[in-house]
Length: 315
Length: 196
Image (cartoon, rainbow over all chains, first blue to last red; front, side, top):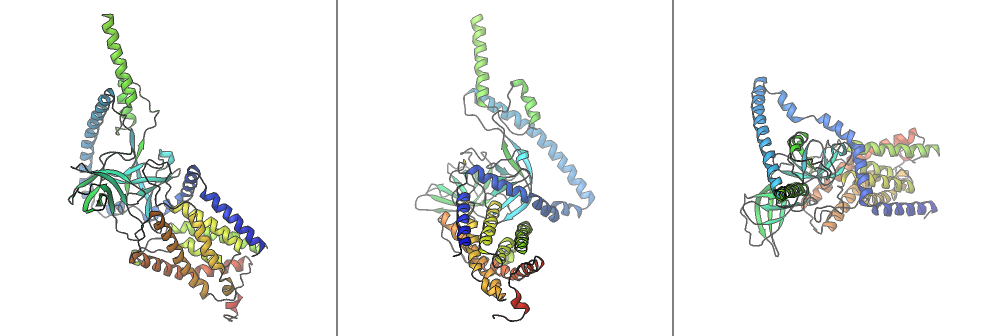
C-alpha cells in the first residue's frame, strides 16, 4: 500500500471515529444545519408541485365556492364561541385542580404548519414542514391535525423541521383503548420493505381480546403527546407469549397530510400575574388551550387562605 | 496538477448538485418504491475516476450529508422510552460509501483501458450492495430479521435505475475531465481498442 493511501486511510478512520463520538448537541446541530441548507430546494420543489387544494378550487364554480365560504364562516363563528367556552372551562378546571394540589398540567400552543416536502429515504419516510426554530419549534414535539396524531418533530432548522411519522418505529406513543382499561405503546414499523402503513399496539393484556373498530387514543403518559388524541382504530388482536398485540390502522392518512399543527409547550417562565390577567393571556395565546401552573395556583390559594385567616384574627 | 485540483472541485460540485437534485426525485411506485439515487450514482461514478485518498474524502462528505439529511435525529435523553432503538448512528453511511467506493477503485484498470461496461455494471451492483448493507444494519439494530420479497424487488429495481443512470454520470465525468485537462485514461474508447 502506498504511504499516501495509508495516511488517507488513517485520517479517514479518525474522522469516522470523531463522527461516531459526537454528542447529542453536535449531532442535532449537524442535522439542523444540513436541513437548513436544503430548505430552499425543498421550498422550490413545493412551489413547483403547487397546492392540490388550490388547483382543485380553481376548477370549481364561483357560486359553489361562495356557498362553501358562507358555510365555513358560519362554522368558524361556532367554533370561536366553542373555543372561548372551552378555554374558560379549562382555566376553571385548572384553577380548581391547582387549589387541590394536583400536578401541574403542561401549557401549550398550536403552531400551524404546512408540509413542504415528503422525504423518502431508502427505508422510511418523513415530512418536512415550513416552521422551524424561529417559530418556537424544537425537536421531540408532537405534531397533529384535526383528525389525530401525525408524529413528532425530529431535526429542526431555522425555517423548517422534519416530522417523524407515527408509522416510524422511533415514534412511540403511550396509548389506551377507548372504553377499556387496556394501555400500551403504539409504534410503527418502517423496515419491512413494505409501504403499507401499519401500527402496532404492544404490551396489552394477553386476554384483552379487543374487538376490531375500537379507537386507540393517546394516554398522555410520558408527557410528550397530549392525552386523548386519536391514534387509530384496532383492526386485529393477536395473543402473544407474554402480552397481547393489536394491529392499528392510523386515523390520519399520512400520505395526504398537507396542513398540520405542532404542539409547542409554553416556557416555564410564562408570566402569571393573577386572576385579572387571564383575559390578557387568553388574548395573547389567541384562545389556544393552556392551563395555569399549579404552583402559582397553590400559591394564590394559600395567599387567599392566609388572607382569610388574618381577617378572622383581626375580627 | 492544476487539472487534478480543478477536476476534484468539479466532482465535489457535481456531488453537491446531485444532493440538491435528489430532493426533486420522485418515488416510482410501480417499481416497488424505487427511485434514482443521484448522490450514490455520482459518488460511485466518481470513485473510478479519482485517487484513493480523494475517494475516501468523497465518501466522508457524501456519507455525512446523506445521513444528516435522511436519518432522523432523536436525542438519547428523549422522553420517549426506547425511542433511539433501531436508529442508525450518524456516520454509518460514511463507512458504507467508503466500502462501495473501494470496490469501485478495484475496477479502475478496466476504466483506464476504456472498458466502460464494467464501471456501469459495477455501479448498479454496488448500489444494490449499499442498499442491502443499509438494510442489514437496520434490521441488526432492530433485531427483526425479515427479508420479504418486496425488499429484493426494491433493491433490484433501484439497482437497475442506477445502471441506467451510470453511463450519463460517467459521460459527464469524462466531459469534466476533458474540460479540466484531467487524465482519466479514457482514450481506450476513442481509439476503439477495447480491452487492450
